[in-house]
Amino acid sequence: MTVAGSLRVVEAGARVYRRTWRGSVISTFLNPILYLLAMGVGLGELVDEGTGGASLDIPYLTFLAPGLLAAAAMQTGAGDAAYPVMAGIKWRKTYEATLATPVSVSELLMGHLGWVTVRLTFVATVFSLIMVLFDATTITEGLAAIPPAVLTGIAFAAMVTAYTANLKDELGIASMFRFAIIPLFLFSGTFFPIEQLPDYLEPLAYITPLWHGVQLCRGFALGTDFTVHPLVSIAYLVALAVLGALLAIRILRKRLIS
Amino acid sequence: MTDSLVSARGLTKHFDELVAVDGIDFDVAEGEAFGFLGPNGAGKSSTMKMIGAVSPLTAGTLEVLGMDPATDGTKIRARLGVVPQDDNLDQELSVYENLLIYGRYFGLSKKVIDERAAELLDFAQLEDRRDSPVEPLSGGMKRRLTIARGLINTPDLLLLDEPTTGLDPQARHLLWDRLYRLKQQGVTLIITTHYMDEAEQLCDRLVIMDKGKIAAEGAPRDLIERYSTREVLELRFPVGTQDVNAERLDGIAKKTEVLPDRVLLYTDDADDAHNRVLAAGFEPESTVSRRSTLEDVFLRLTGRTLVD
Image (cartoon, each protein chain N blue to C red):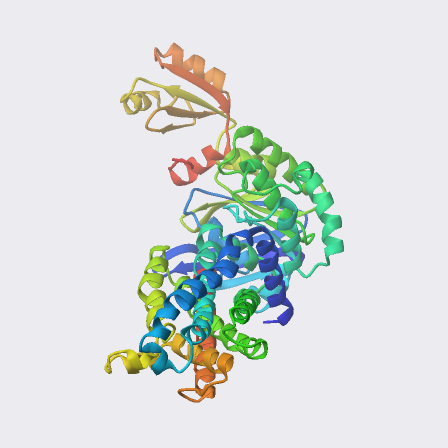
C-alpha cells in the first residue's frame, strides 16, 4: 500500500464530489441551522424555563449543540460509507474499474476513508461555525470540537464500510439506519444526559461509539468536565476506526479479488 | 515460447465447489490478437480476471508480461488495459473526467492525460462528447469510452471481455473497426467472446473453451478446416420431423448434425449436396447453404450450440 495510491482515490472522490455536491448542501448547511433553531432555541426555551435549566446548569442550546455536531459527523460518516460503497461494489462497479489499475484494495479503502475525512472536516467546520453564530460556543472552543467530531465520523465510516461491503443488497442499509444510527442519534446523550436513562440502560449508552463522540465534542466545545477521561473515548473511537478499516479491507478483498 | 506476453500452464480456478477453469495451457505472443471462444460459463471471464491480476489462481502457473500476478499484481496492472464485460464507467462524471481519474490511478500527470485523452477521444469518435455526462451515452459509445479508458496508460496488453455483447449490429461493426486498427498498430489483444463471427473477424489465434477446459486451439480458418467441412447445408423440415429426415439423409454428406429446428449437412460443396437432397425426394421447407463457421467447430467438438 502506498500513500500516493490512496491519494489518487481521494482525488477521484473530490472530482466526483465536484459533480454531486449540490445534493449534500442542505444536509451540511441547513440541517444544523434547522436543528439548532427547533430543538436548541424552540425546545430549549421550554427546557430552560422548566426544571431542565436547573439540572443542566447551562442553556439547553449550549448543551445540545456539541451533541448535534457529533451526531452530524456520525450521519455523514455512515451515509458516505453506505450507498456510495454499495454503488462502488455493485451498482456502478467503479471499485472493479479502480482495482483493474495499479490501485490495490487497501489503497482503495484508505482513499475512500481519506475522502470521507475531507468531507467530515468540511461538515464539522461548517457546523462549528454555525454553533458560534448561535452563541452556543466560542470560536476557539468551537474549533477544538472539530477534530473529535471528525474522529467520530471516521469511526462510523470505517465500521459502516465494512458492514456495507458484506451486504448483498441495499435493504441492509435501510435497516442499519433504522435500527442502529437513529437509536444512537436519540439515546447517546445528544438530546439529554444519559443519566436520564433508566439505570439498566445507562451502561449500554457508555459503550455506544456516539456517546464517546458526544462527550468529546461537548467537553471540548464547552470546556466542561468529561464524564470519562477523554483519552479513553479517543482510544475507543480510534480502535473502532482501525478495526473497521481492517475488516473492510478484508471483506472487500474477498468480494472483489475473488 | 520465450517471448510470449502471457503464458499459462495447468491454470485452474475453483469457486468453492465450482470448477471454473480446469487446468488450461496457452501462450499469447506479442502483437497477437488472441481469443477465448465459448458459451457463457465456459471459464473465459475467470481466465481474464486471473490474467488481469485481480483473481488469485487456485492451481497451475501463470506469467503475465514476464511476472507473477500473485506477487507483482501492481506492476502487471500498470501495463494492462482492461475492458470489462459490464461498463463500469463513473456515471457521475463526464467523458473526459472518466479518462482523467483513470489516468490518475496510473499515476499519469494531468498534462500527459490531456494529450492522450485528445487522441483517444478522437480514436473512440467521442471528441464532440468530451464534456457530456456518461449516463445518456448509447451502449456503443459507452463501450468505446471504456476501450479508450483502457488505453489511457498505453498498455502492452489490452484485455477485452465480451467487447460487443449487447450492442446493435452497427455499433458492433464500428467497434470491430476500432479494434482492428489497434491490432494494426501492434497492440496485443486478448478477447473473450461467444460470437464466432467476432472471433473470426478479430482473432489471429483462439482457443475454444467448454466447461473450463480448452477443446481446441488454432487460427480460425485452421480450426474450421480441421473440425468442419468447407461448407454447410442447413435444411429445415416441418416441426418435429428433423430426426426422421436426418436418419434418411445419412450418407449424402460427410457428417449430419440434428438441431431442434433444422438439420445440418457438412459437405465440401453445399450446392451439390442440395441437388442430391432434392433428387432423393426430400422436401425441406427451407434451405440455406453457407460457409462453415466456428459455430460448426464448436458444435462438432461439444455437440452443443454456442449461444442458446
